[in-house]
Image (cartoon, rainbow, N blue to C red; front, side, top):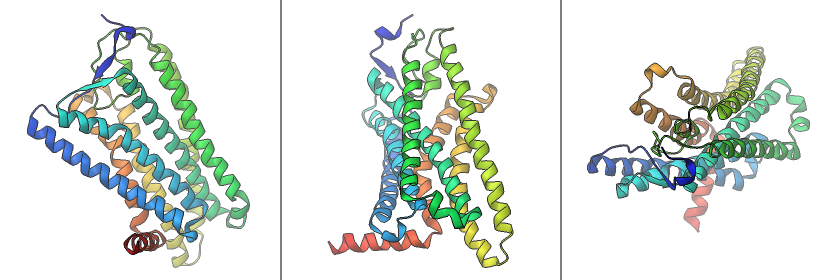
Length: 309
């Protein structure tokens, strides 16, 4: 039996034991992380450089890309380093930093997706008030609220989690540090305080979820009332990327944390962790740019500037 005061490092779950598979994992994650950083970096550059994209929707998309870059940079590099050097260790402070950053970025992203839903609701259901309700100052305040709420939420959870005494070793059953895995190492009764905090947080996230669902019900009702087919198609095309991103984010996170214990296994938990922490940062920029001609044109301008210089 050991407590947290004597733990200087944690052991992460390896993806494979064979050296060939470890190197394969390293190469795969290297490609995924580079694709995510490049795609999100292109969106940030396009929105920042093209004045036509200086609108609330693209301002929030820029913030989403920054969060996605931070999210994949929090979990993947350490996993890659462990596979490359055939190690499992992460320092105590490094583990705490991972818990804080991944929770900060994921919660801030959820709050931002809720704000982006409000943006689409106002644009389609209250277009005459769009400039008033979503002026530049209001957009900055809302984005700052998403970042600030995520920071406070993560700080509270991280401080509470790492204040618990750890009595069940230092082996984390995941390829990065996350709160449910740390709680499994805590003493039998001390984790109840964090569980209570998680329950309170669930109500907060449920409120955001209900807001998103109600908003999209109103959006679809408004779109179906548009008389022209071309108008309906244009309205749907501005909403579907956001709806796809929200669905991907919520479906993976909800399944990870609400799946029945009977189907839980280390391999399944590892796969699900990849789905909610690695896949969205790669998929989001492609979802938003796939059918968006404005972003494609901005990409071409950025590429031309880079080639010219």
